[in-house]
Length: 92
Picture 1 (cartoon, rainbow, N blue to C red):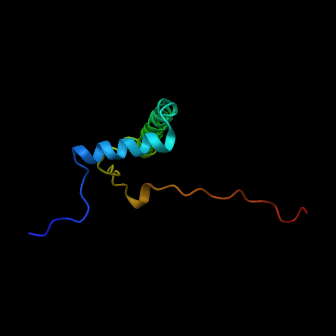
Picture 2: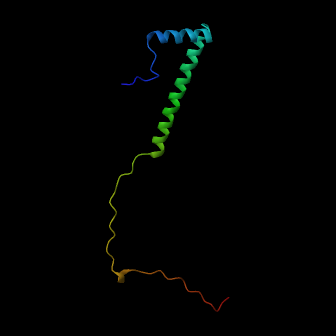
């Protein structure tokens, strides 16, 4: 079996990463960095929830399937046709 070239960091590797982060950002800026990361994650979570809610609102509830209404059978003799009013063509 071939081992993956890149895997998740194990115990000692996390300590090395933490030391590098402290050296790059400084110990005083770590709380600000963590606070900013937390706010960014909360905003991202709220926006993705808002997008899902918008999709649900646009889609709306599914319409209920109703069978087509049957029209009553009407004999042709009973149909009344509307006639246009006749105008007197002599007056004009």
